[in-house]
Image (cartoon, rainbow, N blue to C red; front, side):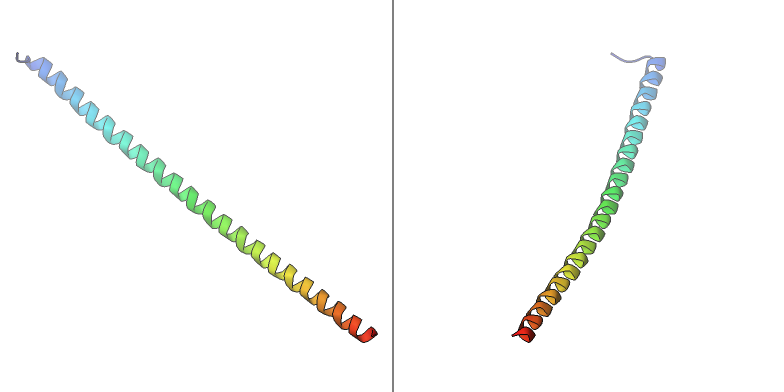
Length: 80
């Protein structure tokens, strides 16, 4: 069974529409994926910055506690 000329044109137009639709949906998916990855990288950098800040805070706190302990020991040694 062969198609008439108008049916072939309609089938051709439908095929082109399907291909264009597939290309557009693929483009949008790629664009969304890139956007999500950029957001993940941004969040990762922010988290790394927060972690570095916390590490500096805990190091400073540890140094302060160590100095207080040393000062207490030296005061105890002087009082003996």
